[in-house]
Image (cartoon, rainbow over all chains, first blue to last red; front, top):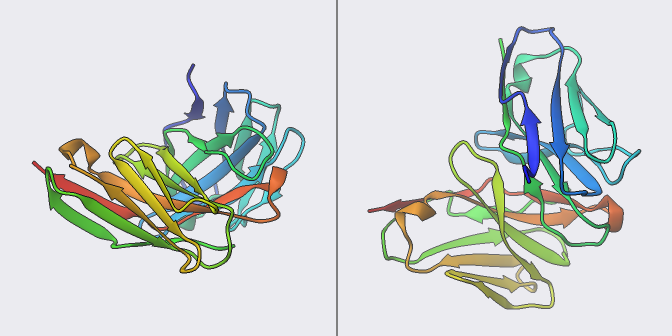
Length: 114
Length: 114
C-alpha cells in the first residue's frame, strides 16, 4: 500500500499563478487534512474534510480552496499564489469518527512562490 | 484552536544518552499524541496517551501525561544517531467526533551525535 500520496513533490510558481495540490489515500480513511509547515511555525491546519462530501476551515484557510473529490482524494487549490504561500504542504488522513486516532501523513509538497 | 508548545526547541546529545522533550498545552484534552519527522519527510505517529493514563511505553519511548499541569513528556532512552529528527506533540481541538482535528506544536529538534 502506498498510504498517502501527494503530487507534485516540488513546484515553483510566479505570484498570481494558480495551481492544485493533489492528495490521495488508499487506506479507506474517512477524514483528510491539509497542513502547511513553515520554519519556526510548526504545522498549521488549512482545511480538513471529516468525511466524503464535507469540508471545513482550519486555522489558516485564507487564499486556499479545497475539494473532496471522493473518499480517496482531497485537493488543495491556490487560486492566485502569493509569496506568503511559500511553504511545505502536507496532506494527512485518519480513520474513524471517534475522538482519537493517529494521522497518516504524505511526504509533502514543497511550493515556492516567486 | 489550542496548540502544544514543545521544550526545548533544540536538543543535542551523545549516542547512548537519554533524551527528554516536554510539551505544554492550554486546555483540557482527551488524548495527546507524539509524532516524529525526519528531515525532509512527512510526520510519523509515535504514540498516543489518553487523559486517563499517566504513563505509556513503546519500545525505547516513554510518554507521561500530567493533566493537572497540562503537560506531557517524551523520553527516548539509549538514543541512537537514527533518532535524529524533529519531535512534535499534537493535541485535539474542536467539537470532536467526526470534526476531530489535531494541532501541532513547533517541535523539538533532536540531534544525536555518534
